[in-house]
Length: 358
Image 1 (cartoon, helix red, strand yellow):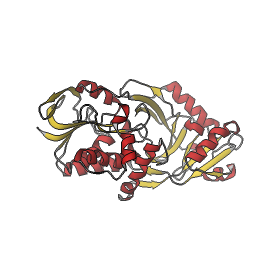
Image 2 (cartoon, rainbow, N blue to C red; image 1 turned 90 degrees about the vertical axis):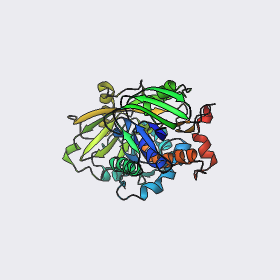
Image 3 (cartoon, rainbow, N blue to C red; image 1 turned 180 degrees about the horizontal axis):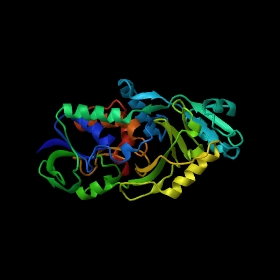
Image 4 (spheres, one colour; image 1 turned 180 degrees about the vertical axis):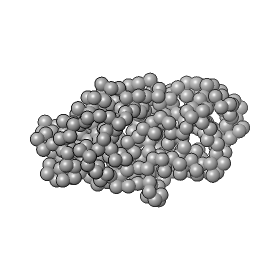
């Protein structure tokens, strides 16, 4: 065998798993694109908000916080602001409670974000517990750790064939043929396709497109200290980014796995929802793009050995939680493969296990 562990997928899930597994044996990671983190990982909103998502997702994100705190510069203050019109009180109060916001007055909200329209915004909430994630620093740190332990991170290696062989797996790719004892499926939107190629039953993952636009700082203002803003039910969001704003319609449109791009009409609808809440119109776009957020049937990550084929390991269904959960998710993969008891607890490990799908 060329390696102990072969990982398919070079996004943040695969890269972090490569770092963790490199302590246990020889790792080979295969990424289809020219660079690591090409798809969803390079198009993330890059926010650490551990209260976001289903209960098991929150548990995984909370367990990741200690790792983030241990690396200077990975996290930086951002904050969250929820704003709503008068007719959205029910959704507003739901988000206020579940995401642990403090209600604030519209005047207080405008003191933080002066472009909010007082004639439209009727309610606001604020939370300081959300932080920006330096995604590049995180990716490069995991990649450096993996390579420091001898891992091979191979790009331009689109997988074309996977065969079960004596002692493990043989994977044929554009970069050549590789063998390993354990196969880790961290292929993002393509995880079910990888399973089918490997002869493993797919679990029913669904990729959804999310579009984003970068717009100039409204009114030429300094937006660097503004919080991330969003509407009730997350029907749009806006977040400062390198002196500009990222605005998203926060849509979930079912897609086949592909290199996604923004839908102009959907983007326009999202920008209109944002514009309704502010006094500064959007005059032009600096850029637009889209990413695929891939979910399991219950919208919780799937981490662990396949029920029918234990040498096939799932690390999939990150949805919009990949970066904020990757420290704990990758450690869980290493614990499960290495036969160690996870600090996450049996209930959370079970909630993440592929076994829940039968």
